[in-house]
Each structure stands twice: as structure tokens, then as C-alpha cells.
Amino acid sequence: MQDEERYMTLNVQSKKRSSAQTSQLTFKDYSVMLHRYKILLGISGTVNGILALTLISLILLDSS
Image 1 (cartoon, rainbow, N blue to C red):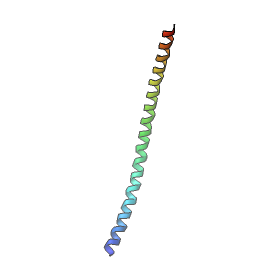
Image 2: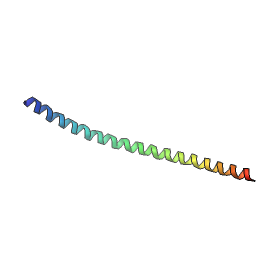
Image 3: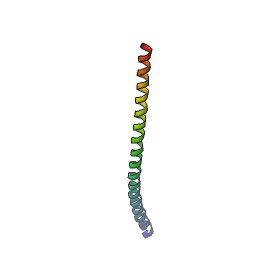
Image 4: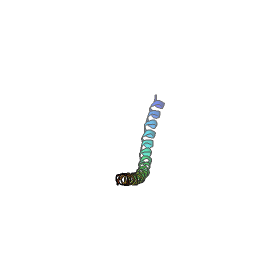
């Protein structure tokens, strides 16, 4: 019975430690992912702007 209690105590403590380590790692990972998403958002916005200007210029050329 004592062995089971020790196992449960150790098991709960190790889960607490691993969850704290996981939260620290994911915070760093989220920071990197956020930076990448910002870069992708900027690139896609630029491409969309170029496509919109191309479409407008084609419409203006076709109408004249």
C-alpha cells in the first residue's frame, strides 16, 4: 500500500513538472510561430496588393 501511495505522489509531481516545462516550450514556440505568421501576412498582403493593382490597370486598359 505504501508503494502505491509513493508511486501516485511521484507520478503527480512528475506530471506537474512536465506540464510546466511544456508551457514554457509552447510559449517560445508560439512566439516563433507568431513571428512567422506576421511575415506570411505581410507577404500575402503585398501579393494581394500587386494583384489588385494589376486587375485595376487591366480594367482601365480594356475600357480605353
